[in-house]
Image 1 (cartoon, chains in turn red, cyan):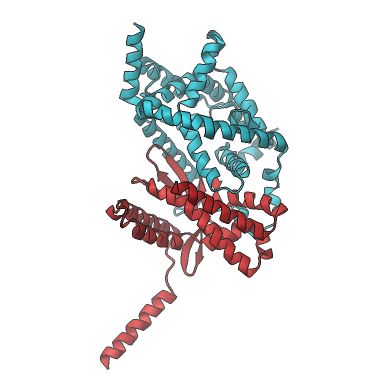
Image 2 (cartoon, one colour; image 1 turned 135 degrees about the vertical axis):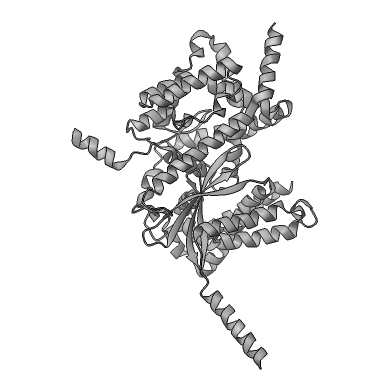
Amino acid sequence: MIKNILSFVLALTLGISTAFADPGTPKQRVEDGSARIFNLLLQEEFQNPETKPQVLKQIEAELMGFFDFEEFSTRTVGPKWRQFTQDQKKRFIEAFTELLRNSYVNTLNSYSGETLAYVGEVRSKDGTKVEVHTLFKGQEKDYPVSFRMLIKNDQWVVYDVIIEGISMIKNYREQFKDFLVKADPEELILRIKEKASEKKETEAK
Amino acid sequence: MNKIIFGLLIGFCLFSGSNVDNARARELTAENAEAVNQALTQNSAGGSYADDGYFEDDYFEDDYSFEENSSKDTFLVWNKFWHGVNDYALIRIAKPLHQNYSKITTKGIRGGIENFRNNLKTPHRMLNAALQGEFAQMFIDLGRFIINTTTSLGFADVAGREKTLYPYTPDNLRFGYTLAAWGIPEGPYFVIPFYGPSTVREAIGTGVDAFSNVQDYFLEWYIYMPAETYLLFNKIDEIYMPYETLTKNAIDPYIAIKNAYLENLAYKAPKVSKPQKTLSQTAQ
């Protein structure tokens, strides 16, 4: 009986703690998130071609939690997002995630011990959005990298990455905006899918 | 005799190449980041609150009025044409050439040659520093020139080993930045043939800067033109690598490069503090 009560209490506290999880600070989130990914990249298993896919999966899981690809998608499309059907939205997110995935896989392969140093942050007036400023300590040069974050499901997630003043979201939005003037959402999804697979082919060569 | 001098030069490059340069670049960005952060965190210890509109540009609910300026492309036809030509020249010609060049040179040699090129640019940096009223930067530059030239003919950035008391920002010492500091708007996007993305203001700046290459006045054109092209080519990997990262995943490479160039230019623009502006306005 006592055992049952104990497990019940335990389950309850666990439940509560997850339901009211403290999102922590954006600074913690960036530091923890980057440290976990960098640690995985430094593992010997990542260098070994046999175990590499497993580590890559772990890294991807980390990245998926750290970056919010749905936010990426809605913000890159902009107001036209409302004209997308539910199905188109879903397929767009899938295609765009795939395109971005291809771009960072290459970056992961060339990782060689770089670190991310917290520099400071700026908050929006209502405190719902934060821009965390960091310095990516590269091999030859340091790059200022900023993460724009908001709270989603009790966690700080990244919705834009700004490298040397160049916002990833804005860069894609400019491209998509121009494309959507002449074409409809369906064509945009197709174009992104094409680009993603084209990239894969060149890498396989 | 010539052989000895050449050997010495190569020796210098190998000895002191890019490592020194890197250390300096590292410090510089760290300083800049610190300065930016200080400016941002003036209000409170743990960060600050953004101005109105700071985060607005990522609201997808917004209309696009804020982006109208960046979308204007006065020279669209010209730009697209030269973007294509430059893309071809960079990726199809310069990149494979440089990949072979990298095989026969070391990082140290390339770094040393880059230091030499930077040292040659001292007169134009000093001129721009003076025009911007940045006299501290001007004297830092003069000091660097004297130290680097006397120790290694400019092949090693010996002066870069010491941290300057006043933040030294060589990237800002160009005529385009000087014009920006004088309050001249950047103007429409403009692609310079065989050079790359620019704006009208920056293109004028690049042109004026070309006139402040002292060596051009006492060397024949058939000597300095190829020499300067070579010096530029020496570090072309620093251009094509980020260029490829940006364009490979873009569905429209032209817009991707244009946006990245303009955003980066705005990021590096002189920070005009508002109170100062109103002060000078009332003084007038």
